[in-house]
Image 1 (cartoon, rainbow, N blue to C red):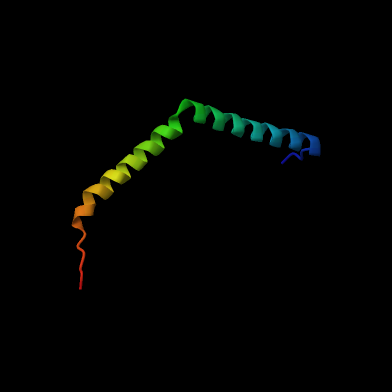
Image 2 (cartoon, helix red, strand yellow):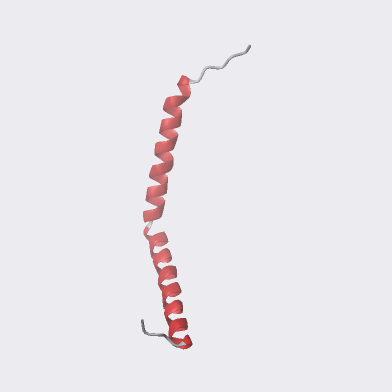
Length: 60
């Protein structure tokens, strides 16, 4: 494997971090993450409300 100089490695790390930040911003602005998290939370709430009638409370 070819060895990278410190400056070349540093440049690659900077580009990687920059790319991750840009990707995060694009995903945030596009609403994709919001769509999936909203769908997940809605589904969880529906399951909880549907199953909440199955609990029995004992006043013993």
